[in-house]
Image (cartoon, rainbow, N blue to C red; front, top):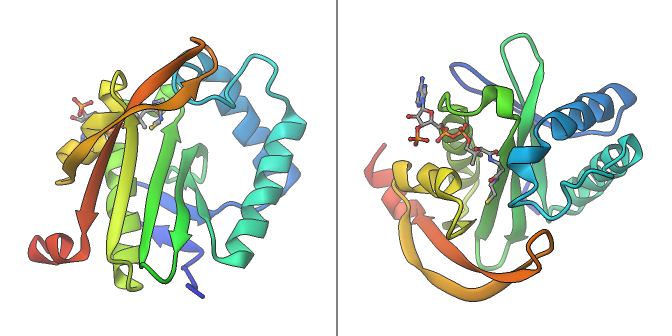
Length: 189
Ligand SMILES: CC(C)(COP(=O)(O)OP(=O)(O)OC[C@H]1O[C@@H](n2cnc3c(N)ncnc32)[C@H](O)[C@@H]1OP(=O)(O)O)[C@@H](O)C(=O)NCCC(=O)NCCS
């Protein structure tokens, strides 16, 4: 099983293993609620009725998945340890040495290059642990999200037509698949 580091330190941010605590749930819930206008078009779970209990249960689930080695969810923290958002290694497939990165950042911290920095930290950790392929999926209409892999050297492999149901719009959405291989990562070290 992959044993990932609980703390990944970058120049401006730290990624910290997401664990359940009342304080973490409060911080998570507060930033979700403040960022709903930017999150809700793209993330089905981000709705007006998202509760503190939902945050707590989510963090509880993060711990369970971490222990199973199937997901590694990190809180993105600023230099004062304030919660800024989440970045996750999802669908970790140990046999195929591949995973998917998912992310969101609170609106107050968006547009400052933090997510590209967080992705770099995840690449260093997981390619370093033997992962061979990292995928990032973005809604074709979510240009800000697509900018992250595009500016981080990922290749657009294709578009999965009508691959995700968008609850808010009640429509199927086309999804970009971006990927980076370990060989490509190592070439650019
Ligand atoms: C998509 C999302 C994660 C992007 O986060 P972000 O931190 O703003 O993304 P980036 O790291 O790419 O930074 C964005 C901008 O900051 C700029 N920037 C400002 N200061 C910077 C610095 N010091 N270093 C690097 N870039 C900097 C970059 O040029 C970049 O510009 P661009 O948007 O034209 O590429 C965020 O908008 C979000 O959470 N959206 C809602 C949820 C969502 O869509 N999640 C993804 C679902 S697939």
